[in-house]
Image 1 (cartoon, rainbow, N blue to C red):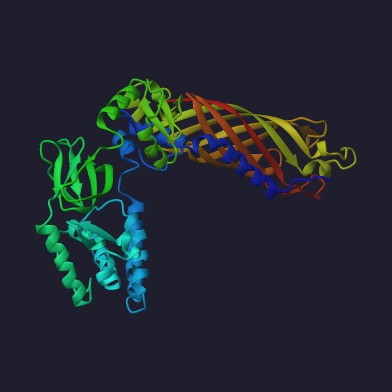
Image 2: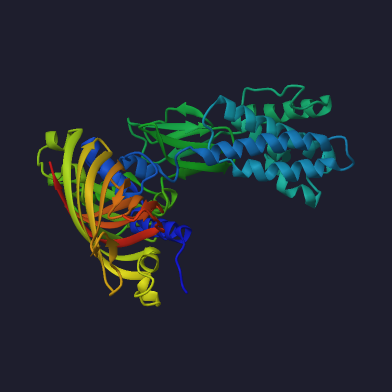
Length: 503
């Protein structure tokens, strides 16, 4: 005979909860204009946002901002540099040092501080030591040296050393960075050449403004009126900082007297025009240069504009360039139209809902074993559930009481009680949790203490999708004649809609 265990029922409750919230586990929220914190919290919960409220500059800089990936790149560089020193005394170990340091050096995308610059300088100095010691006078001719040399004024120079000098022109290497004296002397000759014999290179940084700081190799610089910055030839890390965000970054290699223009992928004119369209609700596409930022934020972003009664107009952006519109409802703001109403921390709500349910009870056979038909319908049944739930809301918390009335279909779905029977099964309960998820506990008449859960997802102002369920625990009861009657598990699961109002 088919049966449903309590463990399977609990698993089904969890699955229904995940399905009910799947639409919300989606996006970060960018607020185009100020909104009350309570409205922001409501929309963030509906979006499943993992970050706090974001501003437009957060969106623009998401793909270029300094972050955890940069920390990891520097940790990798330090680790490889430590490990590579073990090969210094091995035959041809220099080849391993050169190769192994190339990868973490190429992974560095930004220099944020003096400590970052020192880390790169140490790695370049040591890589250059390996290059100079291995190739020596064959640097210009050995094909294997091609990736590690650069021609300056007709002279083959160790490329990592040229980059180290470009990074920190006035700095000399220490015995710790290069342990052997011949290579320290050779580095000094390279540094002197770059400092005194070569014409500087020029970087022309696009769109420098009063609000933007130009950083070259981790140092703030002041471009001339045309945006030009003079640098020592070699490799440089450049980025633009605005409002404490990195809005563009580059790694470039420039030769003597070379001029290189650096322009942000997302220029100010394009950004400002697109942002104005977003605030006017006219966005129909996502600029190609903005899509990496959306990808960096998880692949989907909600542009949010607060509206009346907490309803928020949303433009949904995806990394593939698609744009859709929707509306989010802020539950706390129902019943109020002013900012004061939206900001209040204490409120109330009443929800009335209906669900299509499934009911299982092991009690049908044991209550009336002689007359109950032995088929599946006697222990499993579809049911209709109506629910009324009143709650007090304190910030994000919701505490309430409710009545859940489930009426199962099927001739044998009647609970015997006294001399009669009870088909509608009332569940009187208390509920506590946050506004979207509450745990419930109470009593299912006529026999079962019970516990359950309720998940609600707002889909429109006042309208909610709801998934709920409970498990009634087995008990031992005494009949009028003094005999003992043991009840079995009772389980209900359901999904439906509810309407919530409040103040």
